[in-house]
Length: 383
Ligand SMILES: Cc1ncc(COP(=O)(O)O)c(C=O)c1O
Picture 1 (cartoon, rainbow, N blue to C red):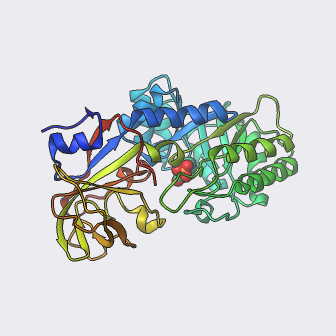
Picture 2 (tube, rainbow, N blue to C red; picture 1 turned 90 degrees about the vertical axis):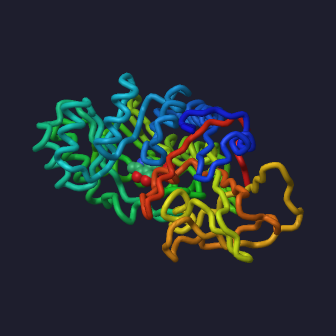
Picture 3 (tube, helix red, strand yellow; picture 1 turned 90 degrees about the horizontal axis):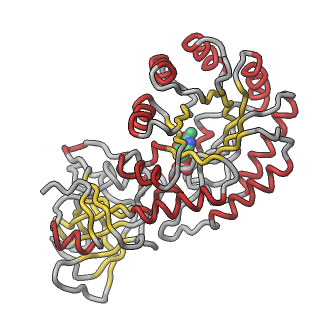
């Protein structure tokens, strides 16, 4: 049965209808609309969706339908996906390191005009490939301090204050509209990260004596997981607004954010099936090389819910080790999961809050490809 784009009232009805022996992503378009509205109504600037987080076309379409018209893209494929599916939407090439061919294609074929750099050599490359600035926008990505995010993106990217001052001046001199960008780290639970980064922005702008035409505060807004309940979204917006008040920005400076996780995490759950039980070990059909890699890379704990066809579970629960579908011994969740004591082969385990960095990170290891998406009407599975 081809379940692509199939629609169901609930996850239980997915089970009753198709009894899937393969993993199924259950997308809630209403939740995507709610999250998009939260950002669009409260963030005081442009909201770019970070496509890398979940590039599935149904997700992009739902976000577009909810009013998202700007997309943060990191490769030519992402640029093409957005431009070809949503010709009236804008794409921004926000990867600080770009292959020459990707710059050329994005510029010449898809009309991309917003770029990020964090080094002089990348600016040289841009000028060599696309010619001088001519009003295009170049944002200088700056390094930010660690505030306990699950991923510290500044370990990889970001100019120091001193480098940023010199780069910003050069960007303006080369005929680009100058801007600054940063990313406080993904799944950052502390709004002070924005206060600190925006204080850096103030310092760099003043030293460079170059008024900003663009300011991109990045992503990093956290999602809610099991045992991980960060401050509400609005606290992060308040921190940004409060810090902006202290910046001497031009009236026409364009403010942007580029969230991934907080826009899409809650929208999707993943239905997996138990293929074997051995005492306290369950062998399921998804794992760390597929949708569940963030259990290892970021110690993310997803809320879980067991499902059974035509029967109920014992009220008693116990801790289980969950093994993934590959033959690899590393394919195991790094923590135990509490589930009914009588769960058995053929039952299903649903993982909630799994819309971010799940299908996007799947490998094809051992021949498993997790590609079935359905939509469901029910509310998200929360912790
Ligand atoms: C440049 C850039 N922008 C935005 C994002 C999205 O971040 P998040 O999903 O934490 O909101 C990322 C994530 O890696 C990124 O690298």
